[in-house]
Image (cartoon, rainbow, N blue to C red):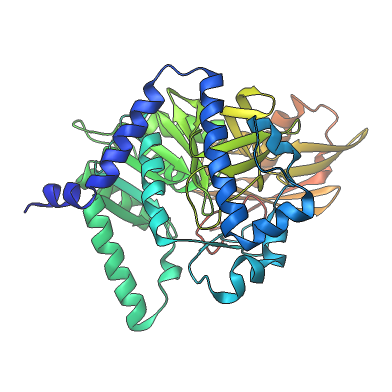
Length: 436
């Protein structure tokens, strides 16, 4: 049996479910049709929650919650569940240690959080993943280059070696060439480029910062992606993508940049469909409610050991297709609620979305990474990573000049720029915008 037949045989059930889901999303459904499906699926999930999950039985009683809902917007009347609640009530949620499997967040914005997990849930996550990628012409088992991390999760010794061996087998069956996103040095970058050329993938997938840096390496060294390239999409995950990231990636790889939005605890929630900035919610797996400030809460609609009900994921979004708070698409994922930088001005303080200074600085030649430290309300320290030694006076002058186009009252003394050899990373391999 050759590798292709083996791959399809092992995943036959998932392929059938994926075909059914693709067909559903290709139907000409009205918003009313979509919301009826969401309500039906939620009521089934909620019935399971209040009969089988001790935490939710207590949650319903404590907050006088209804047995059913009639509209997705009614979930706004449910109390928001956040990570602090999950941490505080972990013993209840894990049923005194009876539940042992868990998803775990990387803790990039605070204390790591665990969520009960059933191994059977991987199939639904796989289908959601490839449903979104289908919109970009990327099919299951198409060859992909993956710039990712998580080697720290394998541990050490014999158990670690076995885990890594299992990962290699899984990657082989999934047709994945996995490259280390932890090491983005110049030498490693060139090795990554050569692996990319040998693989000739249909998609390059990875942390936004890692895909951006690979693209910058290709452009800076006047390399190419190959005359017979099969590439259809560059899929950006796990980190907020600025306009500068998207422009460079599309220019170098000559394919659409695709935003894949989700989290460890939710799986894929939304994905670019048709164009980069139309990020379509996988609405039969999640209800995404957005308040007037753009804060996002997510409700599970697929069977899970521990569904998430009106869960504050901690991100802000710009909704594109929203009625009564129920968003079916986003224009942009703006990042964490706290991704605001503060600088002083002649009239007081300016609070800015961190994406604006990232966009400005990544437009400066050579800069490949940006992080912030808010030292005081009137002092923002910016750490930039670049592919050569920078003239920091010139970088600072450029940044202030560009920022003053929108904020002419800016006080230049409230900004300090440093160059670093490497960006700080979380344990999960991400590059957080803010460092301590």
